[in-house]
Length: 257
Image (cartoon, rainbow, N blue to C red):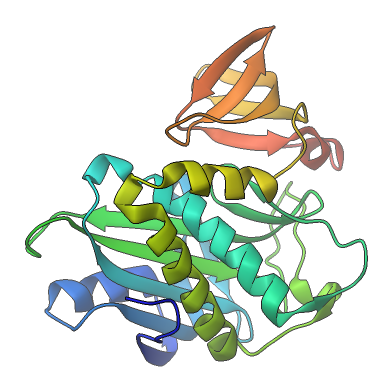
């Protein structure tokens, strides 16, 4: 599919989770690709099972599509989705000069060190033939940012003029399918890796990796050939495939991760 066609968009006033809706509709046989966009979302989920409620004017949107890549490549989709968000923001918003729009591994959209949005990728190989069903869910603080304890947050409205969520979704959709074409079901990941690194923080940036054993101080060293985070921990480069990563600036702002 080319990058210019717009899949069908189902627009809801309110829902629990656009990801759950998109998954249910796709498994129920709806024609794909399909977007679900809600004005407000009451049961949104973030990384590590965090829940959040978001208000009208922000973006709560999920796209469902069939993916022919091996299921073990599904994690790369959150990197691809982040690239698409940055590109859609640059296309639709006139941000103030000096606005530091960037990505943080694996799925956060930042302005400076403050979170402005996130991505939740879900997949299932159930009942759709070859490949798997992919759901890319997007939560962007277009108008307001949630009250979250201990994390710097911001909204795009504080940095420039913002589009309506539905208009933004159409541009985001174009960017996603453009990058899916480049990704080539995983074969073209080097192009995705390069594009992601271009839109992320500086090499050597201090980070903290929250692990089951406790927080580790490290520096960011880009992405591996598979999309894992490369981090310098005590002088040794390690690949981190899952974990909660914070910028030191995010912690230093209020003393708590």
